[in-house]
Image (cartoon, rainbow, N blue to C red; front, side, top):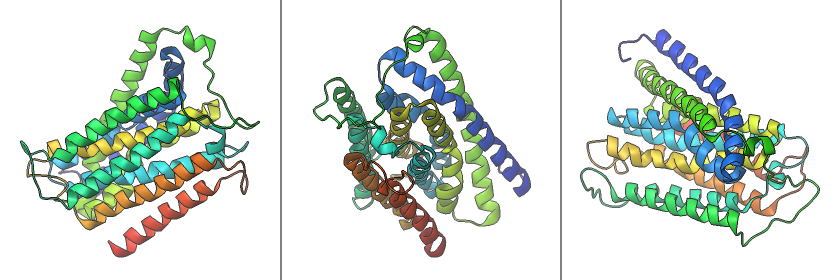
Length: 341
């Protein structure tokens, strides 16, 4: 990969991004069927199955970059992907014309996942200002992220099985009702098909990571900019296409849960990247431009959480205030990154 010309690197980058987008369209249907077959429900299946697996490309990208010593590319790919994917949810809201998406897809576990994401995003920021203490080259924050993530998933499952909060039912609320044909489908066949698609996306993610590094070197663009805007957007394409596909299928909880769950899983890129980075703690090696994207992710998630709680029934063209706020923060962050960093 390092010996590729800039033209070849860009061509491979675009090709891998197209593969990710194509396979991603099929992941939504498979995840919806698995949600019904396993009884997880759309929101939790979106967080665990769809969120984690569509993040496979981003995981490979961050680990590969960290192993090569490209700390800012690894870090900003993770957190820039969170910003891009949250913006994708706003696009899905625009695509869903019947009502505000966050209103129609009311689910207690999505509230839990959004709150969990804000907590997870704060841990790396705290780690950046603490002494660079490591055990076998790994910062304690990396283990803490895994523990908090696992505990958050357990809370989300309990919220689905025995919720202590119930959304107010309206004519626009879409209920998560399993389809009988999915309940009776072969779990083995569904899981195998789903796994094959995940492997394809992961391989394409590796190509995105390597070509993104070449593009950064050949153009002189900072690794943090390439990570936050190029590789993060490309490896987030599965989230975009699966979210739009889920909305088109009427699986609204899956669409929202897939984005929020994918974002929580993306924070774990940092744990994996910290292990792959062998020169100490990755948190103490990053620059302020990479930390910037963590703060952007917190701000966007906070606005989304307000929208999930408020459940604005309709706004301009059935788009809630949260979608407008999310897009304003995202595009404002891109402009700020271009001007400042």
